[in-house]
Length: 145
Image (cartoon, rainbow, N blue to C red; front, side):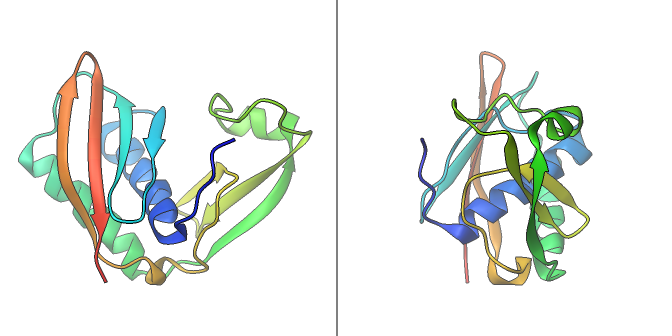
């Protein structure tokens, strides 16, 4: 099972995923690597991001961070969660009740990792780079103070 140790970065991943869904109409990342200094998310997509899209993604993520939205959790029966969420990234052996992380009314997603209590704890979000290859859009990001 993957161990997450960076609540700020992990919560930023949730916000980035929802921003990608809303701005570009794609699904959440199918793969991610969350680290303290720099992280990455991989999306199934059909092209590279434009400079304008990169700027808009950063803007949207930072707006949610600055909004100081509460980050909470709820425990939901797996059958109910399956109707609302893609459960494809859940680890094997997940029980019948799932933990769902909610970032205010902006995002909700089943998750096992640690998170901040408010988006205002995250700091400045910056897309370090992005690349596209073989149907995969990779976004690398970091956080400032």
